[in-house]
Amino acid sequence: MAKTSNAGVAVAELATENKGEKRLNLILTSSVYDDLAALAKERRTTMTEIVRLALGLVKVAIHEAKQGHKLIIAKADGEVLKELVLPG
Image (cartoon, rainbow, N blue to C red; front, side):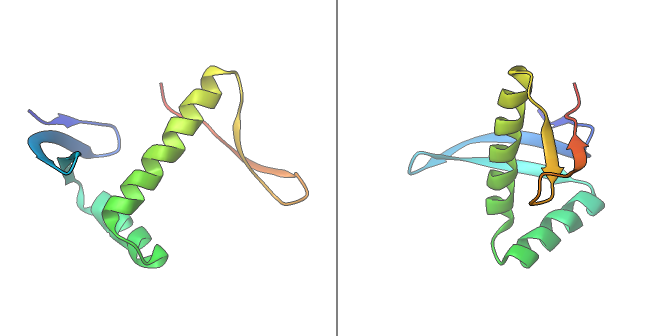
């Protein structure tokens, strides 16, 4: 059964496996799909790789937030431009 998140993404896991990998079906809103496709094109990679990259970044962000650390965007000189806050 699919579950919908705040980001407009519905996820359904399929039971198929291939070489230790699992297939995942995503139902995205048009705007989320377009964003994903644009990022993949910009990075010259696949949408799957963008999802893997995003998962890795969120995993680090959640771990660091649990440690009481902040996720920030800063200039090379250390000037903070933005603080990113994860929902929940």
